[in-house]
Length: 328
Ligand code: SAM
Ligand code: SF4
Image (cartoon, rainbow, N blue to C red):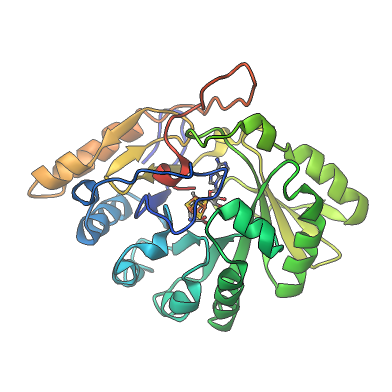
C-alpha cells in the first residue's frame, strides 16, 4: 500500500477496546462514556481485519486501546495473530498501562510478542495515583517484573507533563537504565476534552532534552522501531532514549502507519478527522474483496500530516476524539 505522498504503509495500530481501568488526566475525562458493546468489533472481526491488512503488506501490528489487556479474551486474538508471524507479519507488539501484565506477560511471550511498550509517567506512588486517577503503581511494577522474567523487551512511555513529572525525568531515565528498559518521552497532544487546559500540561521536549544533556551524554542514533520516535543513546545508562515530538517537530514525512479503532473505523492520521468505515464492508461482504477495496480507497486519502497546536486562543482540542479511541 502506497499513499499519495509515496509513503509505504506497513504498520497498523489496532485499538481493541476504548475501555480502560485507568483515567489518565491527559488522556481521558474523569467521567468517560464508553461505547456500547454492539458497536465493537468481535475478536474474530478484529482478526479478519488484521488478516486483510497483512495481505496488503502490513508487517507490523501494535495492539493498543484503551487498555488492550482489559478486553475479555484478548489473549485469544494475540495468539491467533502470533501464528501469522513469519507469514507476512514481522512484528506483533502492544502498548499497555501494565496493570494486567503480571497475569499475561508469559502468554504474550509464548504468542511471539518480543517487545512491549509500557506507559509509566512517574515513579512516585502518590503522583501515579493522581495522574491515573485510579491506579496503584505497585501493580505496574509487578507487571514490569513479570515482563522481564518472560524475556520481553520493555520500552517505557512517559508523557512529559509540565509541573507534574518534569522534575523526575532524570530519575526515570536512570531507573530505566537500571532495569534494562529504553525510555521514550512523549509530548502531550490536544486530543479530546479532558476537563483541563492542555496549555497547563504541555512541556516541550526540546526543553527536556536540553536539560537532560547537562547530566547525560546523549548521542543521536539511526535506530528506528517503525514508529515516530527519534532515538539517542545514553552513555551513562547504556540504554536508548526516544523523543516523540508531534508538537515541536513534525514527524509526518516518514509516516508509515494507519490506525484502526475497535469499531472498525480506519484513521489515516492520528491528528485528522478524516476516516473510513471498514466495519460496514466487513459485515456486509462475503469475501475479502470489498474490504480490501475499502482499505485501498482509504489509503488513497491519507493526508500529508497533522495540524496539532496548543494555544490558549484555541478553545477546542485539535481532534475531538480521545487518544484512547484511536490508540496511542
Ligand atoms: N492504555 C495503554 C497505555 O496507556 O499504554 C494504551 C493506550 S494509551 C492511549 C497509549 C499511549 O498514549 C500511552 O503511552 C499514553 O501515555 C499516550 N497518551 C494518551 N493520551 C495522550 C495525549 N493526549 N498526548 C500524548 N500522549 C497520550
Ligand atoms: Fe488508559 Fe492508557 Fe489512556 Fe491511561 S493513557 S487512560 S492507561 S488508555
